Length: 389
Ligand SMILES: *Cc1c(COP(=O)(O)O)cnc(C)c1O
Image (cartoon, rainbow, N blue to C red; front, side, top):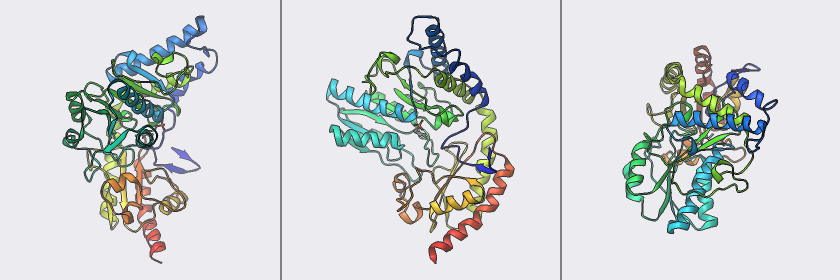
């Protein structure tokens, strides 16, 4: 992916839209512009595209089509899941305890903390190990009859680790507690069958798998109590008001189909490149650590911390050298705070401020990676000198 000869190595933040997806979307901006709620032919056409898209998503996650709720993004799906179930479970049975991991995307953690601050819920975090993984036994110890919802991230955006969602789900179900997973990263690379994973709710977002930005899915298992967070018309089973964004929904379904149909092809492209980066950086750069699990991680994901390195300075130098990378969390300028996720893994601040995430795309080449690996050590030396001076 070339843009003014800057090499993009930040595919966990977003991806370009696959041309096959763009093609399928285009007619729905123009001649097929109908509102899916209208009775006439234009409406029927939009409704047909909507329901066909819903069926595609349902087939790939192993659900019923009526369990698919289209939303405006992964963040909205997370918000709807957490708020919707928390409010419904409190109303029906007084449950006001929310259990989340300390390595959630802010769309979950900030929603949970708002429920605590403004609405009187109690939020408890499940400890994670050095790889940011949740031990199902720790869920078992903390889950209570008055737990309204448990939410644990599937594959972590910052550190790539993939949690044992199926086992956590089993525990939640044996206790009769609703379980949500944020699979926005995972769905781009891994099978996400809702029965295998034992989830009641699951968030997906299109722009992490070569679909458009601004469209997502929340899977909601039949019978799960949920209040809408966007009220209005009766769209999406009365759970998400708003005229359907048909072109984006059609695009999401196509992109998801491609991602889920081509996993093997994509894996065999990613894995050698991923492992080459990990091995080379750990071998060549002193005081470097991999963050996240060495193999139970996303196939296109590498993430590191470097002692005595200012991560933002490193990112700017990499950008100047022609490589677009990330620190893993939302980039903060000014007085940098270490990422909550890295602190939850037990890394000291001095290490956690030096984070680097390098994530691969379908078009990333071995040559690009070799160039990057030649460039990085010198830049790290330079940043370290800036700090000690
Ligand atoms: C990107 C991402 C989100 C947010 O999705 P948007 O569609 O950008 O709102 C949520 N969770 C995870 C794990 C993500 O990677």
